[in-house]
Structures are given as C-alpha cells and as structure tokens.
Image (tube, rainbow, N blue to C red; front, side, top):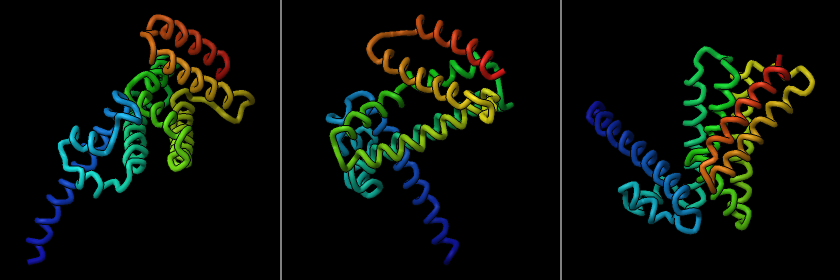
Length: 199
C-alpha cells in the first residue's frame, strides 16, 4: 500500500515542480515584455497555462511571484555562465563578453522593471534590495573566479566591480537601441584593461 502512495506522490510532486517552473518563466517573460503594471498574476497564470488559483497556491502574492521569478532566472544564468567556462579561469575577453551578455537579455529587462516598481512600492523594495544584493554578490564571485582575479591585491576588487557596473550600463543602453558595435569595442577595451590590472 505504501508503494502505491509513493508512486502517486512522485508524479504529483513532479507536476507541482513543473507548474512552479512554468509560472516563474512566464513571470519573467511578462515582466520583460509588459513591465510591472502589465504583469498581473492572472496574466502570468494564463501565459503559463495554469489557473489563477494554482498560481496563488505556489505564490500567495504578486511580490512573491516576481521576486522568485527573477531569482530563479538569475540562478539559471549563473549556472549557464559557469558552464561556459567549465575549466575555471578563461580568456578574459570571452569572460567579459559573457558577463556583459548577462545584462543585455530578458533577465536584465525583467529585473529592471522590478527595480522600477520597487522604487515606488515599499512592500516590494526590501525584497528586491535583498534579492539584488544576493544576485550581485554571486555575480561578483563568478566574475572573480572566471577572471582568475586575486582580490587580495590592491584595486583588483574595484576593477572587477567596475566591470560589472560597466556591463550593467551597457545593458541599460541596449534597452533603447541595438548597441552591439559599441559594446563590442568596449568589451575589447575592458578585457585589455583587466589583463593589465589583474596580471
């Protein structure tokens, strides 16, 4: 009898996980395409192909849904970034380009909409601030690892943080126009600068 219960439970857990993942992916897509104002739980649920009740079962509030969605995709991107360079420290130009790419896709667009909403909504602000601090620390750690940077040396931490700040700025510029040509030149320049600064 217990084996029947266990067999029934596993598919239900799998379905629950799959539903949660569809909701998270739909939330990021909606936020990137429609912004905060156009991204309601009902809109996300419809896009994910689930009922509003199922969405609220997984994420009781809108804030829960969207902060979880941005965190989920940030973790996925971090995993994908590390997977690009499985051998550890890599060619600096390739690493700089990959880090810049983090800020030019739908995740950054979704995160930006979340930041703007958080600047006007007190309930959301503390959650987004905490999330961004955590994502920022992880991205910095990945950058240090992939660049083979020794942060015990003076100025190295600031150079890595400068790279991430620059990448974020390029991501902002890319929201309005295709900035590919200029971005490629900036990536090449930053890689040269980092080669000299990091040794």
